[in-house]
Length: 489
Ligand code: BG6
Image (cartoon, rainbow, N blue to C red; front, side, top):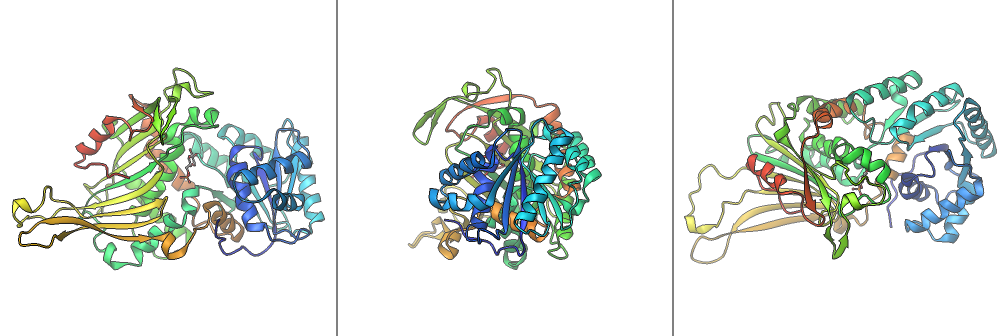
């Protein structure tokens, strides 16, 4: 069950490019369904016109959509069919000729007239990088970059393949759209717990006052996945986790954890601060990076194949499925404090967490026998699953002797609020409202690529690791060189 964010007012047409793809079927469709399932059939607030190369008709597209909603656990077949009959339509893009785009424009106008829509449009581009120039040109040639209402364009990540391609893509986009029409999506920013990082930091003086090099020893950001490459070999083998996860999701978490307080919650004020974090990152050196690739192993009690044996993956592939990276922020708040990022496929279980590890006391005046190790306070922010916080601190065990023990204070979102809304729902509502705060700005996406460009240009060694482990031993060594140990997720 998902919770609905406050609905956006108004009624609009979402034109979904790449509508037969994995993202559309698994994420976007269930999110739109959750926002729109109770709409009157003749006045939907969210109507979808899917488009892709495949020559489908409305009926076939609806059947696929119904199957996707049922598979995602979003609806029963009957409920999905009821909604699809009014909410889903399809227009093939054929060979993507100018005539195909004119036909698309005509179909958009027809659907808007049929449903009496005001002309507000969201063009959702869930497309690989290579497909974007053609689509942008097609939209321009058919006059689809403007309408009598608003036209907003959503672009899925990864935005480009490196700094040069991201710059080029920004230039191409700006030829047809103003920056305020462009929504570069990173679904991590729609997660409640990720947004809560700002509230947690800036509404609680208790934490903000210790959130700096004066009290923090290092910060760890882990995004671990149990899943392997699944059905996305074609995409993933060309991307790897640095493009797929680090440049986007982990970097966004880093920005929110490290940024200064913005002067307001305005979209530009928040994003300005994130850009400042990105620009403060010292150039990556080869010794700051460990790339890994999974071999066969056991995950969740199940024997799984190695990455190179997966369907659709080249036998000699050198694509990384794991990365551990040490970043240094050259600014007043964080100078000298390592930020350790780690992500991987086929790790023991799914877990996204930020651990702020505080310094140990400067002088230890308890007897040596009081503790096996001098434990540092750790604040663990779990972003998924079982979202919440945990603060580890030392207490005295009762008794005559001084003996210390680590105890924990917990907060769990689920206990306090119940289920959280889905990130895609939150972000779609923001697009409809015209609020770009949780989307990535042009300069921000370029600044993020600039950080990782050295790894992409010279990827370096690839360390194998067994599926079901926490990555290659080299990742442990990387942390140790920074004076840290990865916390258990
Ligand atoms: C996507 C990546 O952006 O995020 C996937 O392309 C990854 O490879 C997914 O599995 C993880 O998202 P979440 O929300 O399940 O943590």
